[in-house]
Image (cartoon, rainbow, N blue to C red; front, side, top):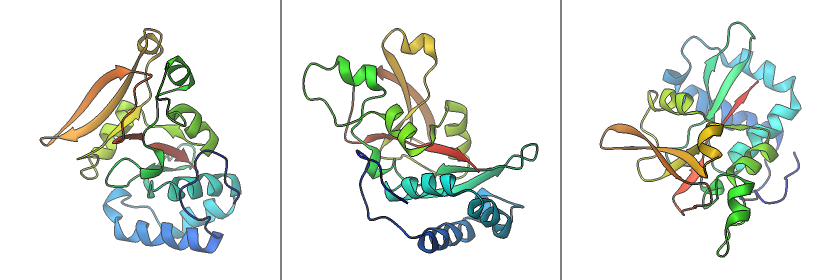
Amino acid sequence: MKQKKGIDNKKELTLEELLKILKDRFEKNMNRHKGVEWAEVQAKLEANTKKLWSLNEMERTSGEPDVVGHDKETGEYVFYDCSAESPKGRRSVCYDREGLESRKEHKPENNAIDMAAAMGIELLTEEQYRALQKLGNFDLKTSSWVQTPSNIRELGGALFCDRRFGHVFLYHNGASSYYAARGFRGSLRV
């Protein structure tokens, strides 16, 4: 599972190591995927090395991916980043390339949209982020960029979410902004 430039954080995992980590996390967090059997998930994963590579990237950048759903129509399993805080290996980034390039100084190394694409994942939508928050308390100290509607993005803005005071908040910021405590969470369908 080769790494792509710009998202290096941890050592590369072997297939066996990655599957063991995913299985252990799956078994420790059964509330996230009631009625789903690990053997079925593993069979899907072993049949799709491209998706395994993406899960490795999620894990390597501290996302702690886990199964959060099963689409009965397509048969796909849905993984989200389930780390307690926004993944460490994906923080301090602007929303997208346009936001990054619009910065005059103090540019971060990357942006959320390009990083997600390089990893083969998608940023969570606001709806997905809120669904994740029903499975636990995430982003109590950090925040995560979420997919931004084009009409907001065209005006220079971007959206992010977090959980504070027992409530999930949706905020806005300029797409060129970046903070040490803001990253992004991804989703992957296998």
